[in-house]
Image 1 (cartoon, one colour):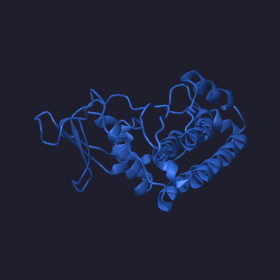
Image 2 (cartoon, rainbow, N blue to C red; image 1 turned 45 degrees about the vertical axis):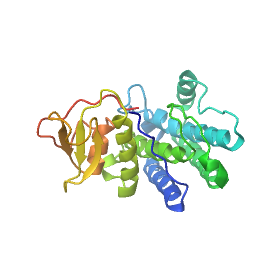
Image 3 (cartoon, rainbow, N blue to C red; image 1 turned 60 degrees about the vertical axis):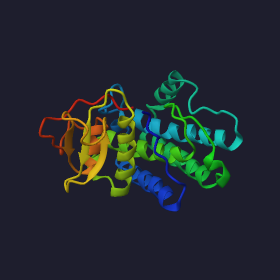
Length: 247
């Protein structure tokens, strides 16, 4: 059964999550040199420049979805996957300062667009590039997820295991919902180091003998689910199950 995508209300504390995630990313980027931007990342075919340019280009793409909600006229996030990929590729080799300045500019524009979106628009339906039917509240989750995960992808010392608790909670719940609605996902209960259930994939908890329990901190569980680690920091007595590829 499909699982409803996670959404966040445009409350001040949630908007602050996005601003803080952007600030953490920019703090890391202060150390970037032009040579650094050409270094490879764990993402196949992507350098740091690709990651940064993706984040810069994602902000106006999300603004297009806000425009869709505001006007009622379909305005897709990207015209196609090819258009998205070409846009990322074209700007990935810019100097570090130009890439960072682009992130600052576009993130600021997205923040203003979110803050000024009329209250009645937040309940309207849109459809992001990934295909889910949702409201503009979904955009807040998408942006936070991309900022946190791609910050770690830069491989400059930031790890998902060290992300702030509330940001981790939101992104982990989003990833869990993705797998909970995905055919072929293993039957797994996710528990923190205190034994508290933080997520479940597959059939309901306790519904089958093949069900496994994976334990770790929320950040380490997120790193494993998102495919950013090989399972460091998490444990499963029967061995970690294989996961379908995340988005």
